[in-house]
Length: 226
Image (cartoon, rainbow, N blue to C red; front, side):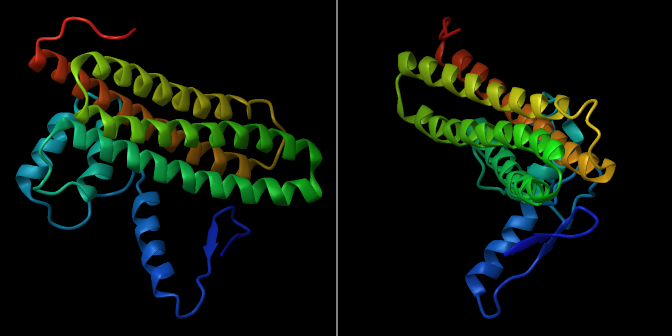
C-alpha cells in the first residue's frame, strides 16, 4: 500500500513475499519516474532511438517524448500506430499514478482543511475524467487497424476528441490552483505531476495525429471526421 510522506511524495510499502506486487511496483515506477529532467538510461539500439527521435520532432515536448518512449520501444516496433499506442499507455500510467497521489492528498485534507480539500477534490475530478478519456482512447486506437476507411475516420475523431478532453482536464486542474492559499509544497507537487501528465498527453496526441495523417495519405483518403 502507499502513504503520503511529509515532503509530499510517496512512501511505498509492499507486502513481504508478494512477488507479483513487487514486479508490478517496479513496472509502475518505471513509467511514473519519466520526467523531463531525467536522463535516458542504458544503451539503446541506435536505430530505434533514431526512429523515436524522428517521430518525437512532431511533439511540443520532444525531449520528454524521447526520454519516455525510448524505454518502451524495441526493434519489433513497426508502425506509427504502435508508437502512438505506447505514448497513450505511458500517459495513462502517469495519469493513474497522479490520480493515486491526489486521492491521498484529498483524503488527508478532508480531515483537516476543508477549503484546501475542495480545491484538490475539484482537481481530482478532472484527473478521474482524464484517466477515463485516455483509457477509452487506447481501446479505440486498437480498433483502428481492423476497420475500413469510413470507420477509420470515425475512430480517429473519437480518439482525437477524447485525448484533447484529457489534456483540457489536466489544464483545468492546474488552473484551479491559482489563487489557492493551500500549502505551497503540496500545491506545487500536485501541479508538477499534473503538468507532466499534460505534457505526455500532448505528445501522445501529436503522435496520434501524425499516425492518422500518414494513414490518410497512404490510403488516398481525402476526407475525415471533424
